[in-house]
Image 1 (cartoon, rainbow, N blue to C red):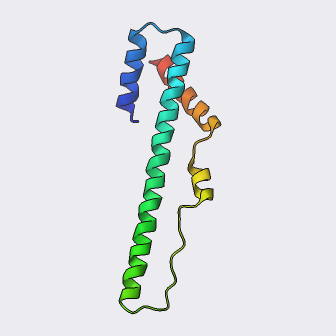
Image 2 (image 1 turned 90 degrees about the vertical axis):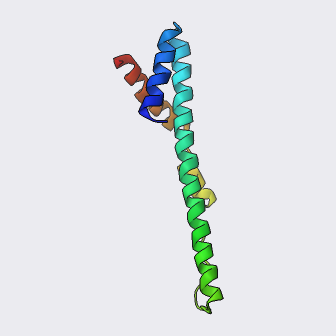
Image 3 (image 1 turned 180 degrees about the vertical axis):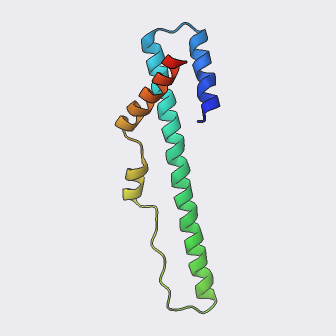
Length: 104
């Protein structure tokens, strides 16, 4: 989610006269959505790199390279765990967005 989308969401929130709890809940949703988008984008990049590495290895084998070994996968449970946003990450992002709204 970029700054324009955040500003649009902020304008929508300001136009509906929501109470503080509703605004915080909506900001948490925005933060979770933004971090989720980043997670999926990063994960997709690693998956694409895995495919490229495997394809290059297969091409090398087809061209007679018998010394190269199959590349290790980049996407592992550990990588996914490290990339996935935690609840702390979401709350920190929400605070950042909420400060932006307050300064509006």
